[in-house]
Structure formats: C-alpha cells, structure tokens
Length: 142
Ligand SMILES: [Zn+2]
Image 1: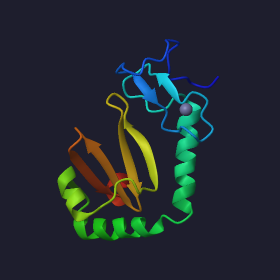
Image 2: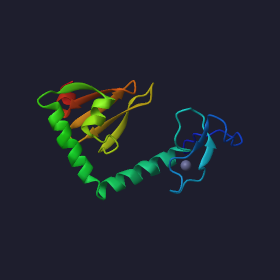
Image 3: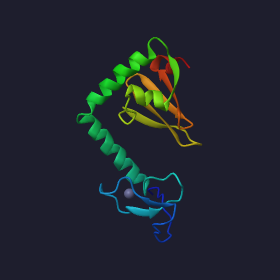
C-alpha cells in the first residue's frame, strides 16, 4: 500500500493544513488536499517519489553547470578544512545554489532536516540558518 499524506476531510482552502501537491501536473491524483502533518508537501509517497525522480532526470539532462560552479565555490570555501559552519546568508552571498545537488537524504528524522551531497561535499542544515559543510573524507573517518 502506498503511503497517503492527506486526511479524508473536505478540502478547505482557508485552512492552514490545506495543500496543493508539489507534484501537481505530473501524474498526481489528489492535487488539492488536507495534510495530515503540517510539513507535507505531497499528497502521497508516490507523488513524492515521482517528483524526486523528475528532479533527478532534469539533473542528468543538463544541470551540470550549476553543479560544477557549486563544487568550485565549495572547494574555495572549504580550502583544506574538513568541517566548517556557515550561516545561510554566507552561503547565499557566495552564490552556492543549494537546490542543485546530487543526492538528498533525511538527516534528522525528528525535525525533518535534510542533508545533501554536492560532489564530495556533505551539507546539512540546522535551525534553518546554520549550515554545516563536511568533506567526504571527514564523513568517512567518523
Ligand atoms: Zn500528488
């Protein structure tokens, strides 16, 4: 059975749990729904998967320029360090585009925090504003 993230309530557009599925228009069958959890962005797990597959495909089809530029910037930023803390503003000012990553995973189940990999760099976000970047070497040694 696929996981469903909406309730059986009638859709109420003024309610704070009213959502439009992020995967709307890409074979989504419940584009408007009442979310079970405040953090839901998709109506179902299936839509979540379809959306990430689409993103992956787009990435393969020619998103390599921002990726290369991200990696170059990360290299300069990290120099010879293996772990550095940044604020979101610092990352934005340097022009690193955190929406262009190779892989994304659930890092912190409790707070639904995500981590991403861009090349050999691991990036995690804490408290919205604090960004920790680790190199692959650092991750492997711990
Ligand atoms: Zn959907």
